[in-house]
Length: 291
Image 1 (spheres, rainbow, N blue to C red):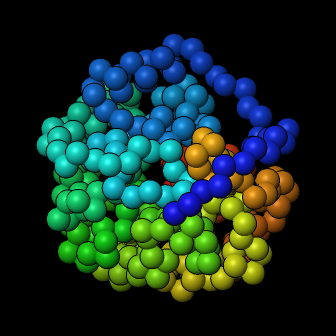
Image 2 (cartoon, rainbow, N blue to C red; image 1 turned 180 degrees about the vertical axis):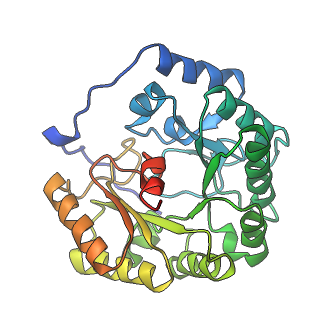
Image 3 (cartoon, one colour; image 1 turned 90 degrees about the vertical axis):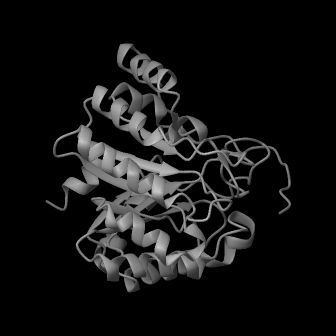
């Protein structure tokens, strides 16, 4: 995958945020460091990390902090060393309990070097969270596990409250944006999950601003609905470093509002859509809309 370095476009006014800090923010940072844990907030340079940490929320990143894939949009470091930390699920649960979380989001780097893609660690993390926190809700944002049905079954058997897997972008852009992923494989994962565990809602998300057009977005939304996905997030792609794919367009907030209305009208039941929306941003709020 070749990425052409170019001067970044200046961010429009609606993408400028005040960065909240304070005791709660520092407490979360200190707890993550003390537990030798990782968060996707930090590793992926999420623009919401200051806000989320300040509200005592974080998306835990398991299976280490290095990924086997080289997606053109992602700031997570590549090249895992193959080691697995079997105590990681317990430490995640302890940190979530210390933060008094009642809704926990767990995601991971992609680990194509592991036979099950890390599915067993996902399952153990869900189990440890339920043991440690009474009535906790757990959302998992999983990789595609290389298309392994047995790996997906292992995660579903642990009964997460939401199973999230992002398409990330439209089919045409996969070779550039997600060169080691397969659009149809991601759809198949969501379809299989909905069929095997219909009581567990499936969720997916798209980044806008990578060069997609409206017809392609419509097609992606239709594909998600066809495989039973009813929870959706839409957010603005932001270039994390000069080495990553450049932003092709900044989508105005009003356009995100229009996409939300269109998605709901098409059949999605819960939709979060906005420049700063990420797949796990205020995930508890989106889940609460189901109840």
